[in-house]
Length: 241
Image 1 (tube, helix red, strand yellow):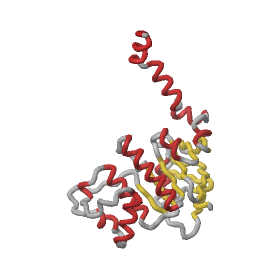
Image 2 (cartoon, one colour):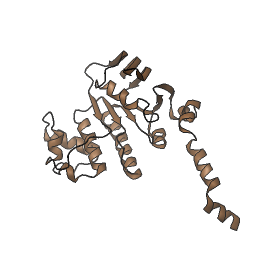
Image 3 (cartoon, one colour):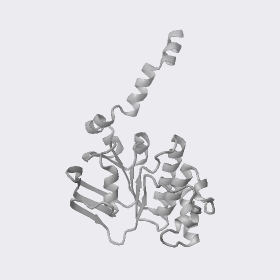
Image 4 (tube, one colour):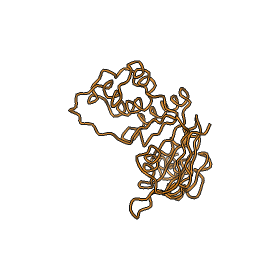
C-alpha cells in the first residue's frame, strides 16, 4: 500500500533552490534510502515531509490517518538537565509506561527507562530517540542520519534494529545515510539526491549508475581491489614468495 508520494516538489531558500522537481513514493514495509553529498538537500526533504519546511511548489500526499515517526540527525540536550528516559519519552505528551517499555524494547534499549539522559552513551541515546519515534507505532518512519557519531559496530547494530522494526511494525522507512556500503545492503530502493534526483532504483542498479559513480567514485569491489593492489604489506609478502 502506498504511504507517501511527492510530485514535482521544489524548495527554495531565497534564491537558492535546495530541492528541484522531486517526485518520489514509498510503500508500506519498504525501506527507501536517500544518499547524496553534504548540502544536497537530503535533510530538507525529510523536514518538508514532516511539515517543518514549506515547499515552494509541488505536492506532498500522505495517506490520511498515517502516523509519522521522526528521528533527527541530532538533538542537543543540556547534560545538567535532570531528566530520566521515561520522562523524556513523555514529552510533550504523557505516555503510558507500558507503551514506553515496548518502544524501548523495539529500539533495543529495554533497560534504560529509569536512567538519566546524561548517563547514556551516544548509541543508547540514538536508540532512545528511535524509541520516541516508535511509541505511536508509526506507519512511516523517517531517519535523518540517525547513526551519525556512532562507530562502525554501533551503526551496524542500529541498522539491524531498524530491520527488526520494519518486520515488527510493517512500516515504511525513509532513511538518510552517508554509510554507502550499509545502505546498499539494507535498502529495497535507493535515491541519489543532489538537489534533484540523479538516479534511483534497487541498490544493484544505483551503485553502477554513472550519476552515482560520478558523485561517490569507486564501488566497494573496486575500492577493495585497488587497496589490495596498492597495499605495501601485501606487496612485500608477494615479493618474499
